[in-house]
Amino acid sequence: MVPKRPEKATAWVDGEWVLRHGRWLWLLGRWVEAPAGARYAPWVTVRGTDGTLYYAPSTWVDDAGAPREPPPPLALARASGEAVFTAGGEIGQTGRNIENLPQAPDAGARDAAGGSEEPADGGGGD
Image (cartoon, rainbow, N blue to C red; front, side, top):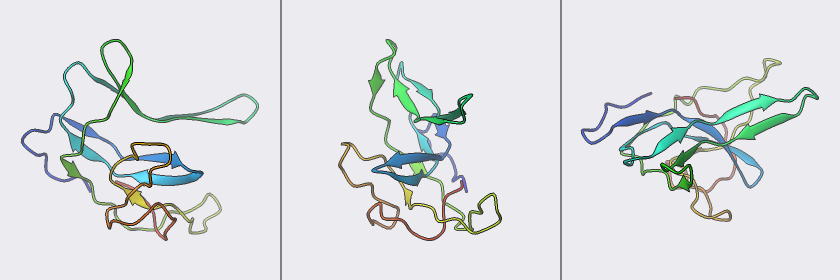
């Protein structure tokens, strides 16, 4: 659920699946103050002609196209907590909801309740 826009917020960034340490996590949608001169490229998946799935995570870039740190969230979406179903109609196991991406490759992601990135029942969707 999208929260009311904070006064300083200039952009809404949708929630997205992120792959960290071999686990899929739901990064909650968020209001941010977009940095001056920065552009946002959303995450995307593409399936190759051989069936291989390619995943490109979202990124913020500067005027020269160089990656930059994402702006901190000013307000976070709230995940519904409803079940996520597989294509076969079974309830799927998903990762935790997280508020921010880890800063270093081996930094632990933290969810809204302050836990680690271990999987939990339920899933994302904001």
